[in-house]
Length: 106
Image (cartoon, rainbow, N blue to C red; front, side, top):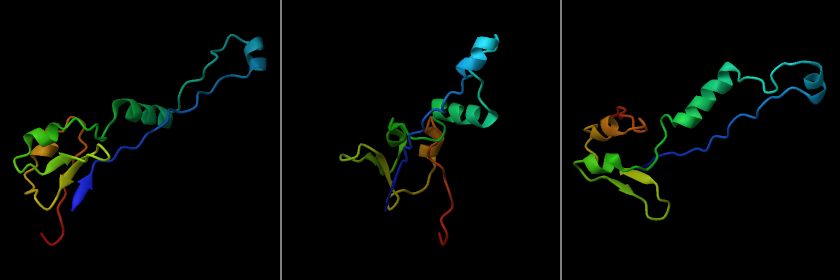
């Protein structure tokens, strides 16, 4: 069983601007600021929280050598059949993309 790191592209929010008619009548800023939700999404997009960037730092530290790169997709994959669950990969991942979870029945 192999688990792939997930990469999901996120587009920046569309910028809101004042209409031309309103701009002619006032000295208000042309571009309106972001809402709280848009700012949070923008920060997630820019900082890349919890997204694997395929840096392979996890594979360098894996004592079981169960983390490899898929030659076809280029994605980093974890072979859970060989992983002993030491958690070193999760500890060294710079993005926090690897999370350790308990398996049921283990």
